[in-house]
Length: 535
Image (spheres, rainbow, N blue to C red):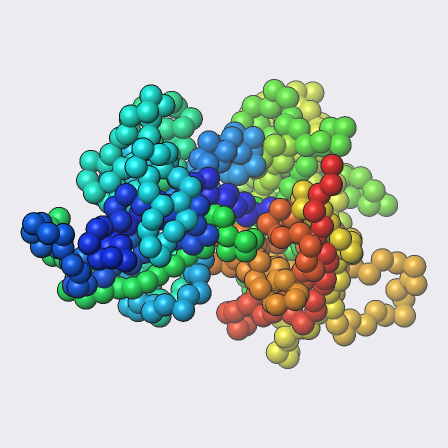
């Protein structure tokens, strides 16, 4: 699972708009319980001023306040449910709300961290602005919160207090786009403060403010360089929206794929680059069905050596084979690779072995031995060493072809169920083989057909009834929908809480085609249903 979504814990629209009688501003109104959020700027609107009062600036503005449970995100990181800093990206996502009103075009919204705490409130009225906060809990254009002792705390500046650093912008061409901005830098600061207990308000989680840039908010006494035109009106769905997939979320994305080359292991060849000649192997330390770190294992002392097989190829035999660690030529007497820690109970190493080993010894089977010992001994059978794990590999060789090949595939999910609960984190195993694969007459009828491992494969999830993309392909910088593979083939995990219960969904898969330098979506669709979890 490489996607986790966090729903907003509070949101509100604040505005200084004129009320319908055009004689009083709605700076005291609250819209914290509305099912939409709104950003706009109106320039030079006519109004009727109160008797005896001087003319007021004729701007009208609205801004969005929104907050997420950073403490829950920190807890998930502590529990290992999301990666450490530097290995995960966070995106603020607001979904466009269709409206019969005019939609602005060619504008930029800026997302800023709010500088002090605020309250959501329970106002609904976004038309006449008659849900006041005066004396009540909630925030508005001038007030940020009502304190426990009944006093009111106002913003230092009308319209909210925001940090000028760590701003994030998105340009809207048509005005109908969703908002999606990478807020990773700010999220990491908030979690750092949350974990350390730092009381510095500069980095405390008071949420986001979403508004037009200063150059596009209309001119006012506090913004003399603003725009002399209007941007009306951009609406997003709020956290109370009835639409499951369109509520505001903070989405964590990361590449959780494990690329275990045990079933896709190649001898080194001059046909491939050094990087392409490298093979990555994994060791999974399961203890009573659970992954567990090897006790008292010192960093850098878990090693991997490759051996040829015994006469019947059932066990490692002889001396460790010479490795080429960089995927190129042999380097002296390198007989082991150092394995690294991946996550709880999982270790990996990358190594290569020259194709000359196969040619000289006619090796069809290799055995990888994982062991630890002193820095002065290499063999796993030395009295100072401990052997943890041994497995086998059937290596392949890179071969040229006399025709251009673009394979087509037969695909199946071997463990797909008809329905899942919204609380499940399900694993899906993908079986792939070339569609026109034809075995020889010497293949035994009862043999399992080997699966084809796709090195770069991605999944997406859509709702069948309307083709809504619940989880789109994540094959960009985050690679959060890229599938893992091991000796059994490709697989991936999906958190079913990402999907709205009561609907049928479908999987579609894309495989990367190096000859096209592009992802190619496969034809097959695999359908399943998500039901509400019942205690």
